[in-house]
Length: 138
Image 1: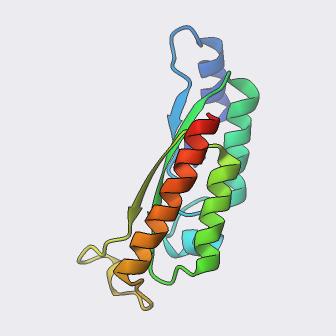
Image 2: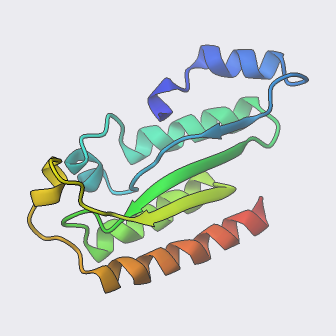
């Protein structure tokens, strides 16, 4: 998690660049702070991006990869756009984007405003286009 990317960790990675690959997989989940709160995540988009900036300031061209859940219950077009914007700002080299699927027994499975499968599929396609753009940039 982004909350685990500490200055101490980055110092160790920077000091041992000959032995540590500068790659971190930081799970964004969503670029919308509203959705992140609904997911009960411990970070905001601003905090997430500050960790990415800190990594870039200390490591040479770090590879930052992520997971993004598309179509969490209640996700609006504006929330989804925030995920695209944060993904671009983070400069990921790989995004594992996948549609939300309700798991029995979890709070999200019974939340109102479930997103239609065709909307999730279309949004996943749009996220994949951003991923290709970011891969090319990286």
